[in-house]
Image (cartoon, rainbow, N blue to C red; front, side, top):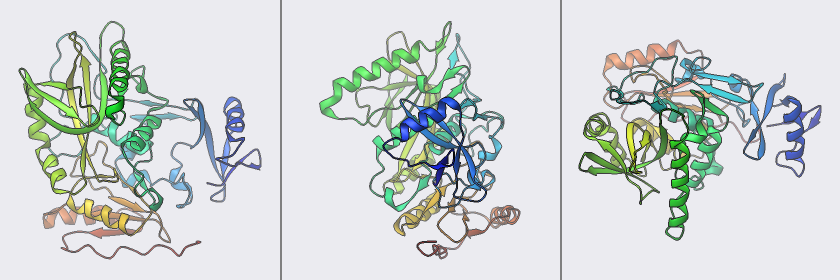
Length: 401
């Protein structure tokens, strides 16, 4: 980004950057990004004790592709269905209101929630004006810039980095009158020499979550890598990576639906080298002090923590990483698997290229639907349909351009 504030170049990072940004934040002064002409306005937000520059809502695609603020056009993914309805950003306040289709409180006995929205065709499709559980995970991945990849990231993206990115994504996000960062638990990387300290921090977080709502049972959200679940007296107990000393319990009905809905995803995770299933789940704290799961969703990621839906998409991501390319992974959000979205936006070519990949075993009719949908997209594109071998990937623009 080439940033200017009040006509002067803004150096970030720089020795005085935080002081300058704090002043701009207090005065609500806009920052200019001069990656293009005309310049794009940006604004200053405070996350924790630090200040950051963010692009204005809906302006990501107006930035130059090589700019850090560049974002894929929303119509290439499921984000366009949610922007302005389920996702309401306020640049003036520096906040984002999320409209969720699942409860954050529980009063008395409630009917079992529907399966989390997202990748599987067997899952319930959310109201397009509200965000489903797995859609929330997609959104936080997007907000934390975990869908972006540049060669400099290779070997540097691990759970500690992912957790920090997700926490940044949570900042200033509200839903149903609550600050999401207050009710979302993302475990820290586990270390045996810090086991007691981490357990105490988790207990404090669970206490904060259980007191988040007055007059009702508060519902928390956990985001972690799913490891396994095994039978227990009343259903099953789930274990997540980095929380070896804390089980989350689920009743028999939720366990049965989890096994049915996510069987294929878990098999795919085992088939894909380095892949991991990332879980997002709602839970309540019982009187006995243990967390009880209410609903759960899964998203598969590569070893680089890039989301994928099937083997061909994982192969494309692996090839792009190996070729040291710059790209942005696209996500489904609330859309069903019958809807066509781009898999990747390749951003290091002369002009950005939308890359489409049909799932393995797609029928001729399904492939035709994808081709018809792509024909309506006014954007340079590349497609991998039923060919056994991946087509050649477009070459990057020459260095320095």
